[in-house]
Length: 365
Image 1 (spheres, helix red, strand yellow):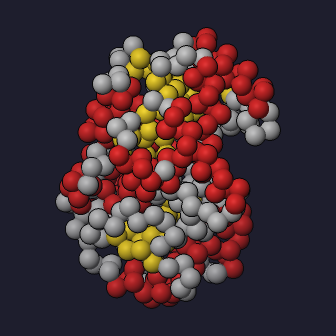
Image 2 (cartoon, one colour; image 1 turned 135 degrees about the vertical axis):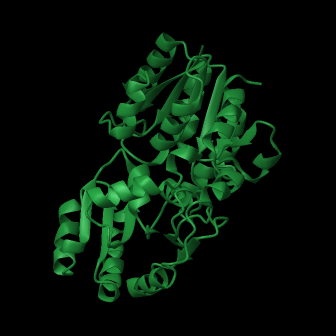
């Protein structure tokens, strides 16, 4: 049994914890065991699912505020757990953790880049320069979800390094593939059978730009009175967004579903997926939507990793939400949901294929 300790900020919903959960769901758990050390001990759906699979969670203080306490706690965790692998999901902030893991004698030390990081800020530029030098030296393996993320965090020469691997933010394709009976059940359950349904998935925070989503629905509603916006997710802006929906006079056409564990089923009942975020590291919810055969409308501030998908549309949030609404309505009948999952498989996002690569990395083959 190979024991792996994942280091990440938290395990609520979405983001890095979704990637870790997807891999642990489909990797051979008789050969690989995951534990997690996190800064935020408040576990959401992803964390609870990981616990059900046998993952043990440890809480770490913020290393930026308590570096010595962080070092003591992490070394205690590593020494007691006798981990074979440490898998760090901290981008350019991984150096300190790598040093501690090396001192503790962890044989396989992995840094996983989930986002491309570019900045004109001199401190960030210095931090990235240090990462380019120290991470290849201190790690045994470097993983990135894309080439761009790898070059950003590990340096432009990383593509020539035999310790570097591209590991896609893969998903269980069959789990999200279109299913007509599931679509009918969801639409019956939500009483949206005769509606044109747009949907968004994500935490209700500023970055996700849900205000823009509500304004898109306002304009769609003016043309299609029976349109509905499904808002899947929870967060600190929920009451504010509900108040905005009321002010826009679309409160009866917006359904706030909260944080859900059945997103794969809810996507079946949707007709178009929107993600007008100010920023996304990858946009895994958009990949899931594409797998279910939906047309996806994404902000062009999001990395264009899904440009390969034939029904992807990258739009500017500098434009009026009305422009998005026009494009969504124009394309509302342009959708062949049954075969879209094949595009996702061909692009290399099937979890089963990527699990085999991750196993090789853990086994140091």
